[in-house]
Image (cartoon, rainbow, N blue to C red; front, side, top):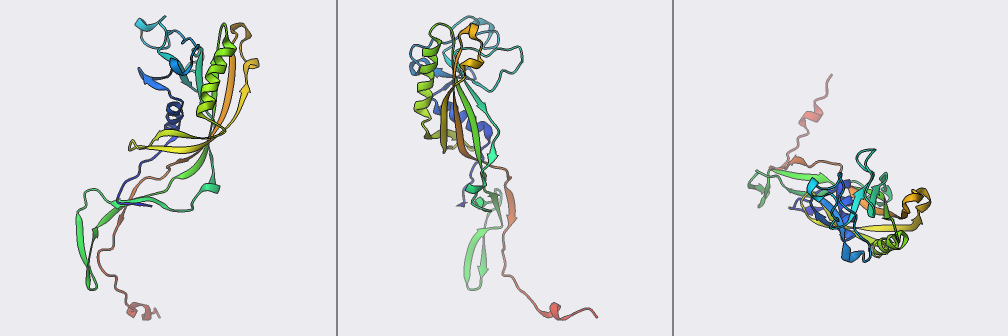
Length: 247
């Protein structure tokens, strides 16, 4: 437990962005792109009616886009080439659970420091404290696909795959996971693959897809902070009431 300092919370979306930033993607215009210098030889796709404003349509994107899960609408096609990140179903990992514990305990905001007399000495503290139970460990699986299209699609997909495998080796870490207070964390990640999914794609578009399976050993905060009243005077006990049994 960390004392006298609040610790932020993490949620699923924070791990999505952590993986994106660990890959080296940068945010441009509220979207994430892999810079072209990290994928040499891969031409960026053009802006469509589903990306950017009208003035950008038909112009090259500033990098290789990373797309989360599936397109928002059934008729919308995701742009190729791209990186696509799909979060699968998280599952509790209670073998990593440290049993019941508190994440932090700090003086409650708005309550000044007080001084009480305990026997023969002065003790300083606060009338109320804020504390929060610790997070629960979760294994969060992801499927990261590297997708190339057109002439030289396999070479382009291999270029994207090589970059992703450098970032996520069989045992690696996902960095840049920001909690609710903006502090960054790192978590262990285990990778399987790559798998070739090209057979399941549209052959006419010459689309080549390689997939990596990631498993992040993460955690999720599922408890809200709570205020607890502190003991400000010595407890006195009497046995008189115990001897007065009802007849």
